[in-house]
Each structure stands twice: as structure tokens, then as C-alpha cells.
Image (cartoon, rainbow, N blue to C red; front, side, top):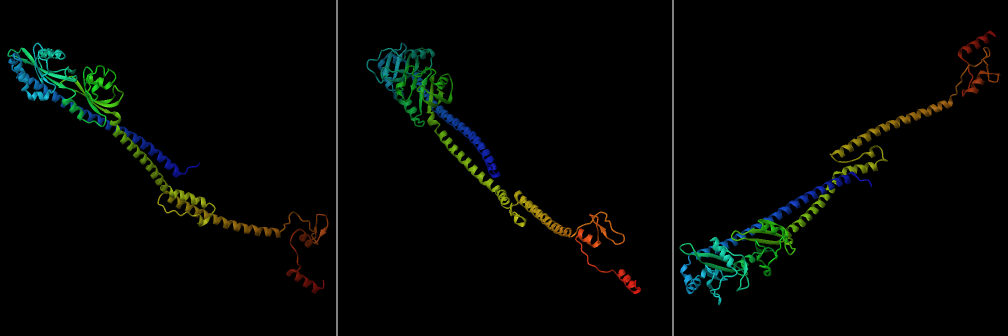
Length: 442
């Protein structure tokens, strides 16, 4: 099938536009996707930093409260447990923070007083938190313990402790505040942050133990987060801070951000399911693909229309030439009102047709004249017969010898060998001679 110029032009331009727009759309989509994803990661990490900073501020302020109260605790109360008990009960401000209880331990780690009071605990030595209290005494600084299961509440808890020293800077005892990890600030604050529909926050210790998590059954559970199960979490526990894609221990693809706390050796994780995190990107991608397809189709349509208009006069010229091939003269002229190359071509074509028509008319005139002269010549040739060669003629009687050897009269011979004929008359000289002869009697 032959393709016209318009179709070839439209096909070429459409192909170019298709490739150009497809590549451009792919590049723009790729760039905007990366830009949007980076923006989501940055925003999520910024939010994680803010929450981690808030947790650090809370823990730091609470630890400072414990330290301040420890400095103002009189050493004399360790001599009388009743006085020590009254001292703790008067500390309503600190008790409102450490809702899991505040306690006084002496230097031998025996419980002196606690609020609220738990029956039959006074005089008992610290058991679960004993290593932690020895570490505080050794370092001489207030500190926060690792999470543990509280023997009283059977719930995950942490304690904050500071040493109480005498005037000689010798440790007399410890002021301890306990926090239930399933209540108070940790749950209320961390769970109040909504990250989409299925996103959540969690705290994990450097020993890979979950401290705060929406699934409470996983809190303080050993080997719940094995090494290698969550690549990005492994990097976070080694010091990485930021956002990235990962798969958690339950096989969920997610966008996760991590920030290490300053006050304690914990990592705050912010989790956003990848499907939900990428929903705006997928929506944007679908929109851009639809726009790109519509743009490509519209471009092809406009290309077809423009090329059709551009080649209209040329197609019209071609059709007229095809229709006028059997015409001649002025009827073969093409009428195209155009100032472009096609109009110039039409003018040149008409000029050429005019010149050819004039020449053809001249040739016809010459042909007619030639035919007329030829007819006239043929007629003349039909009337003329020529005599040629040497004619034997008698010098006296003027008879001519024919091919058979007989002597014919001159008139008879000429009449026989030509189309001429004779009519007899007398010339003036012969007439005068005849008159003279008749007068003389000759």
C-alpha cells in the first residue's frame, strides 16, 4: 500500500512525539516519584526526630527530678523507716510522675520505704533491679534501667535511680522511681501519633528487646526480633539514623525511620506500611500516566490535523493533475489559491501548460499546412508524367521511333507516354509563310 506524503509526515512526526513524550513522561515520573518518596522519607524521619526528642526530654526531666530529690533527701531518714515513709508520702509531685511507685533503698539494697505501700515488702532486698542499683552506685550518676517485668504488676517497667550521699560523699541509699511501660507517658504519647491507618511507633533496646509496641504481647519478649530479619533495624541498632525501605520480622514491606535516644540506649522506630506510604505516589503515577497517554493521543490527533492542512493543497494539486490528464488547453489549468510552494508549483505548471499548448497549436498549424501542400503535390504528381532519356526523332518529318522500332507521329508518341494532349493551331510565323506560299502559288 502506497503512503502519501501526508501519512508519511504524520507517521514520522507522531512516532517522534510518541517516543519523545514517552521518554519525557518516564523521566518526569521517575524524578517526581523519587522526589515524592524522598520527601515522605524526610518528613517521616523529621517526625521521628521530634518524637524521639520529646521522649528524651521527658526521660531527661524525670531523671533530673529523681536526682534533685535524691540530693535533697536527708540522710537521717534512713535511721527511721517510719520517717522515711512519711518523707515519700509527702512527695506528691514525684509520685504523680512515677505512678508505678517510688522507693528508698539503703546502701545494702534493702527496701526502707515505698509509696504506694505493698504489704510485707519492707526490709526485703532488691532482686531484679539489684544489678542496676550497683551500677548507679559504681558510676555515681543517676541512670535509667533496662526494661524488666515488675514482680508486683507483672507488667513491663523501668526504674530511674539516683544515689543519696552523706556529707563525706558516701552512698547512704538510693531514691528509685518506677514507670509502668504499659501506662503513663509511653503508651499515651507514642500511641497518640497516627501514621496513616496502619503505621505505628515502637521502642527497642540495643539488646533487641521491644520496650513499647502496639502488640503488647511482643513487649520484653526474648528473640522476638532476631538478627537479620529486619535489615534496616539491624543497621539502626548499629548506629544508623534515617529512613528507608525494609521488611519487618512479620514479612510486612514498610517504610521505616529510626532515631536513637540520647538519654537511654534505645532506638525509636517509626513504621509506615509501604503500600500505604506509596499510595500518593501510585495515585500520582496513575494520574501522570493518564495525562501522558491523553497528551500523546492529542498530539497525534493534532499532528494528523496539522499535516492534513499542510498537505491539503498538495493533495488537491495531485487530484487535479490526475483528473486533467485527458484535458488540454485552458481546461488543463489548475486553480490553487496558495502563497506557499504548492501555489508556486501550480503557477509554474499552468505556465508550462500554456507554453506547451501554444507550441502544440503551432505544430498543428504547420501539420495542417504540410498536409495541404502534400495533397496539392500528390494531385500535381498525379497529373504529370515525365519523359526521360534520348528520343530518336526524324530530322525531316519529326517522327519518333518507339520501342518496337516503328515511327510514330510526334503527337501520338507524347500522348501515349504522358498525360498531355494536343490541339492543333498555327503560329504567326508559319501563318505568314503559308500566306506567302499561297500568293506565290507554291
